[in-house]
Image 1 (spheres, rainbow, N blue to C red):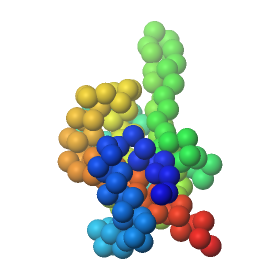
Image 2 (cartoon, rainbow, N blue to C red; image 1 turned 180 degrees about the horizontal axis):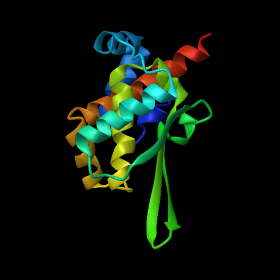
Image 3 (cartoon, rainbow, N blue to C red; image 1 turned 135 degrees about the vertical axis):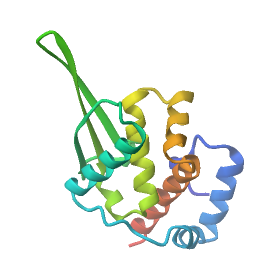
Length: 167
């Protein structure tokens, strides 16, 4: 059976169901039927406006974001679909934070739901640094289907990798 590295931490039941989809060759059909569209957010500028729009809708009082960009060097192999970075700087008598979000460039080719899931995930790190209960509650507040989208994104990554190795 194929190694399911993107969903290795999921329950045996989910891994078994995913394994059956993969070995029967139906994973691609499942994903294409459930997520038929691709998004049009192709530039760093449009990605920035997209993420800021989500932030303004759900986290108005959160720290400002200074940069949002795609990065072709961001490796999914390190389990990083996106990265949230922040720096604290002393400016006079105030402590200023500088937040930025980077999304793996491969998500330019993803369904809009997957890009939203990643944006929500990284935005949640503005408030909650750790992957704890409060973090996932915030993710689900911004995207009620967060957990299903995360699983389907991981399955899409597996399917995409499988497609690339067959050429």
